[in-house]
Length: 354
Image (cartoon, rainbow, N blue to C red):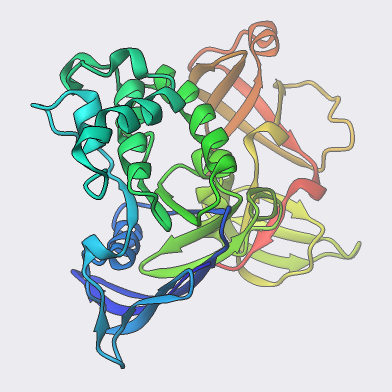
């Protein structure tokens, strides 16, 4: 078990949070730049000394401000994978890994380094220097080095950020498999909710140094606690003023014009969220809207291919986006400037505090 209680100021951010991660579990800290994510990792690793708080791992106290305990970083046995991997450019892959084997007799270091590289499928590249490796290969070498010292905790700072989109997809799947195998607590930080959902057993959303919500990725997406969390999960967030109507539904008059309907009771200033894949598009003048209560006439701003899906940016009273199949987009003839009607159900409209 890894636990952290921390109160300190880092630059303009007041960091104040508590978290626990069980052995064999991975917590993804998700949030925007400047939220304090990397500072959390640094506090655990001993690279940042909080003003108040404690860090305990596997029953051993690494830091306690009140008791004046502060174990040196090199004695905490944290496996730390930095965003850019921080490999030594002048050393071969196996020598980078051997750097983490300082407690192993020199004669055995190459064999143990090769065994770790073999675990990550890059033993054939043992004699190559980092400059000759792909982004995914560098990541595997960095992970092998992090595990060389048999760490009690694994810390990963934006582990896929240095990779291109194609490499990130395959490296992410490999990393998710590795994290499931490890029997140490792991924390990774990311600004990408999809990455957090892929890699984390649980996700904690961090903003301005505080945890806004914690749960599984599915729980956060289904019931975001705030407009901020909804926006981070990829939802469209619209702001307006809510009132109850004669049918008992909540009508939200949107800032800038338009109105949407939700089932959740609310009054006053609110935000509402809906996911792009819950929004359907149809030609202007098409009378068939099915059971969808929400209808906004909009203009197509952009059409972006996402594999076999298309994300459509829409000009509405507030920014809107829809996701649909490539076939549907082609059938509708969607190009920038096309006028369409965006529809979605009242049940898909989540009402959130502003």
